[in-house]
Image (cartoon, rainbow, N blue to C red; front, side, top):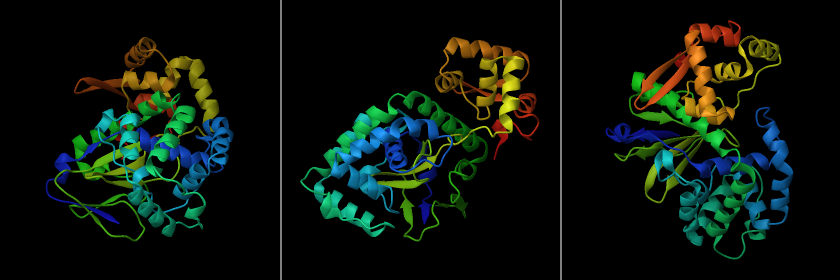
Amino acid sequence: MLLRLDSQALARSRFALSPLAETLGAAMALSRPCTDRWLAPWHARHHAAFQDLLAADPFAKGLVTLVSSTKYLPDHVSLPPPDGMRTRLGDELARMACVPDDVVGASLRLAVEASWERHDLGAWLTGHDWAARTAVLFQRVWDAHLAEVWPRRRALLERDVTYRAGLLAAYGWPRAVERMNRHSVWVGADAIRFSSRPGHDRVVGPEGMLFVPYTGLGRGTWLCEGLGLPYALVYPARGSGDLPSAAARPRQQALARLIGTGRAAILRALEHPATSSELAAELGLSLGTVGGHLAVLREAELVVGERAGRRVVYRRTAAGDALATGGTSGAGAGTHP
């Protein structure tokens, strides 16, 4: 499937965040056994409670089972975010709750047709106000399983946007959308292939589109559309699945003994460029502590800071790369394709 962009679309396209997309991904991840080592600690803490929630609510169980096993996400659970990088979950859920039952029902039937499992809508799609009930479910998932970790996840998402915005400024949109998932590729001068599945192409008009990172929980990439809003392509953020290999862990422990635990953590985190605020949120450190560590790393010429508008974005130097990776990386984080 292709997204075909008209001549004005790129000028209006932009990045956005969506707590709703993060919640949807979390629900899908918690509905199945965990196969991702990065996700395993969070999954182990929350899986049982989430399963208890589903067991007590047939509507919730039916909906989550369906969205976790279909190639077509129901429209009301995958709405484009309305407010760019400032989007709040409450605003997204308020919009979700207003979707009429006839629209929800039609979308759920399409999801059933596109599922690789059998589903009996009549067994759980009872009563009315299905979109409002879905909004209540998503709020419960957020409160119980995501609210506590959201600041750190948001910092990771903002770092992905920082990275891709740098590519956009230096090379244009084709490089910025590269590797959003294993299928995303620029086709010709005006189209993005975002899926290998058959389906009709979408045309992105002069309003442009949104690119929305999430922490890679659940299902890879999906397209949001509906309610007269721009298309939004949700994709896994860079770094959300990063874990050190068994071979790398002794080297990382040695690095911590050499330069200190805090500075070692920052140097490793700067595999992907970040601001001091993003590092503080990701690592759970105070801004002052991060600033002090960065000052030492700058003096040692292991990191450099570059101004991007009102922000200073830090990245590792070649020397910082060599120290953090043991010489296994050939380029700084800011030069990764």
